[in-house]
Every structure is written in structure tokens, then in C-alpha cells.
Amino acid sequence: MSLTSAATLATLDRTGPRRITDLAAVEGVTQPAMTALVRVMEESGLVERRGDASDKRVTLVCLTEAGASYVRTRRQAGVHAFERLIGELTGDEVEALVAALPALKRLAELESQDREGPKQ
Image (cartoon, rainbow, N blue to C red; front, top):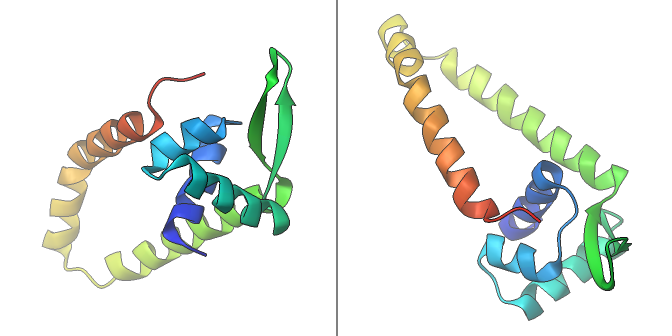
């Protein structure tokens, strides 16, 4: 799976259903590229398109249970990888990492806000 596909699934998991135009903007790709990507993920059963109850002209891309499961599995694999790597650090290195956690958390929040843009 491409990084853009994985990032799009993660965005849908965090923010809920989105328009293709919104997803394209968040992921930094063109609308035609996102349309093609959504089509492939739809064929794979990871996302589905649904109408928007508040605006019948709009179609939203939604994560399916298979897509949500993929995101959870991918995140868990990342957690296990970090656990293994942190286990190889010295005590001083672990302390330095713990001390940096507030700044790293803030960076993640800023990046997430930047990627998600205005909420629908």
C-alpha cells in the first residue's frame, strides 16, 4: 500500500467521512489522483462512498470496517517496532526521550492540525 493510501485511511480514521476534494487537499495530491486512489481503495474494500445527509449533491468517502482494521493493525505494528527499539536504548537515552515527549506531542498536534485543515 502506498504512503498516500495509508495516510488517507489514517485521516479518515481520525476525522471521519470526507469529500474527495478535502482528502486531496489534506494529502497534498490532485483531485483526479485522489479519485483514482479512492477507487482502488474502494475496490479493495477499505473505503466506501456514501451520500451526505446534509447535502444530497455531496458524496463522502468513509472508512469500512476492513479499512479501520487495517489502520489499527498498522498502528499496533508501529507501537511494537518502537517498543523493540526503545528497549535497545541506554537509560540516559530513555530519560532524554521521555523529557522530549511534551515537545514531540506538540509537534504531532501541529502537524495533525495542518494536515486536517478546517473540519466539515
